[in-house]
Amino acid sequence: MRDERRRNQRKKVLLEARWESLSSRHEARVDDVSLSGCFVNTYWPVAVGEQIELKILRRSGEWLSVNGYVATYQHGVGFGLAFTELSAATKRAVEDLIATGG
Image (cartoon, rainbow, N blue to C red):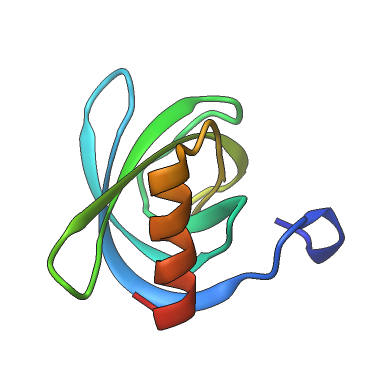
């Protein structure tokens, strides 16, 4: 996503992830995250607007599950995921992930 469109500052991270779409489950990596979304490195193609459930493996070994939609897509690189409907608990977990880098 382009900087001027970002509402929140992004934190560089390198975390394993899994994402699910309507069709299947895929392995990926998250390389940056903010309160409004993250970038998911994957070779698997997605459609802009597609709904995604993303699970991020925290350094603690716990999985953080977030839902969102594909805001941007770069073929062969990955996609920008815009978070939707973060519960208070999930928002706190994302804030902690940003503060600790994982």
